[in-house]
Structure formats: structure tokens, C-alpha cells
Image 1 (cartoon, rainbow, N blue to C red):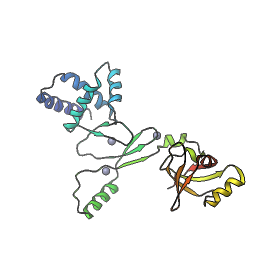
Image 2: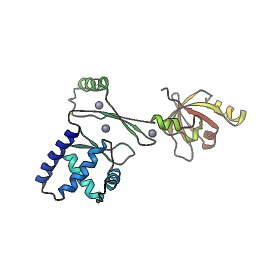
Image 3: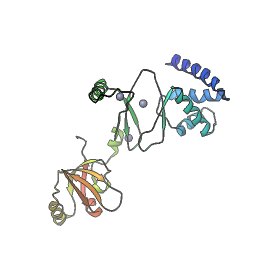
Image 4: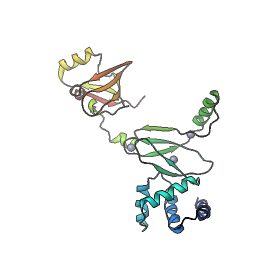
Length: 227
Ligand SMILES: [Zn+2]
Ligand SMILES: [Zn+2]
Ligand SMILES: [Zn+2]
């Protein structure tokens, strides 16, 4: 890989020299630090790494440098939902997809030939010629999953989460009220919206239910990781 990045830097040096931009050595320092990470990195994170190496550059300079590097095909700029843009090294002829943790932002790369072939088949069935695709799976990484309390009130569940009702607090009266809505322990719910105050909307089977926050605090749930 060392020889490859060496080759890429020489390639880049020749291309930006044609641009007529100055500060070529500074630009190559940015690229050097970027190539050493092999991560999906934001401009801010790259600035931190540059500072650790003793380079103190303006964010605009670093951004401009990275954008040129992207335009020349050495890296890709990716925007994952809910995150600032990230740059990742583009290895010619090698493709991968991503798993993204919505809690800590961790990004895991994967490649699966079956998925790739299936996508090609689906596109062909629709008469599409594929130019590019991206497969992004959002979820909760194993580390974040471990940190979760096994039981929590429904009021703390996040939109999109599937949970199982584990217990209902507050005695018979609450149980009866929930029972009249068709909710019982061991039922599965999907959280549709939970704005942090006011009512939550949950999916229960094929029905959507609006639950008051007070009620949601009395329903204890665990994450349903099976589905
Ligand atoms: Zn793919
Ligand atoms: Zn995580
Ligand atoms: Zn990647």
C-alpha cells in the first residue's frame, strides 16, 4: 500500500502543478496525513491530525485541497445521514458499502458479492444500466448496543426502533387502559415518532397508536434485536 500512496502522491503533484495552484508542499502534507488514516474522515478530524503533525492550516485550505483530491478521483466525499461530509480514500476498482451507527457515528465497511449481484439483477430486470450505487445500513453498533440498558421506558425509545413490551408499571388500572388499546406484555411495537415531549406514535401490528408521555413512561420495553 505504501508504494501505491507514493504513486498517488506523485500523480497528484503532477496534476495540481497543472492547476497552477501554489503551496504544493502544503497540499501534499494534507494528502500525506489523509492517506495515513484510511478512515472516513471529516475536515475537522483531518485538521486535528494535521495539528498533531505540526501543520496548522486554515479549514478552507484543507477543504479546498480535499475537494480537488476528490475531483481528481483519489477520494470520495460521502455524506451519511445526520453527519458532516466525510472523505474516504478511493481505491480504483475496489467497491465497498457501509454500516453506520446512528448513536456513535461509527462506520463499518463491508462487501458482499451476493448483494452486489442481486442489485445488478434487480437493475437489469428494470432495464437499468448501473453507473454506481451506494448501500448504507443504519443501525446501532455492537458497542452501543452493549451500553444500552436492557430495560427502558418506552418514552426513551428512538424512532425506528422495534421494541418488546416487557413490563407495565402502575398496577391494574394502567394495564386495563393499555389492554383496551390492545397492548399487552410481550407485544412488539415499532416507534414511529418520539419528539421528546408530548405524544409518541407507535406501530402495533398494522395499527398506529398515539400514547401519552405519562403512559409511555409506565411501559417498560427491551430492544427487539431479532427482527
Ligand atoms: Zn455495493
Ligand atoms: Zn455505536
Ligand atoms: Zn468506506
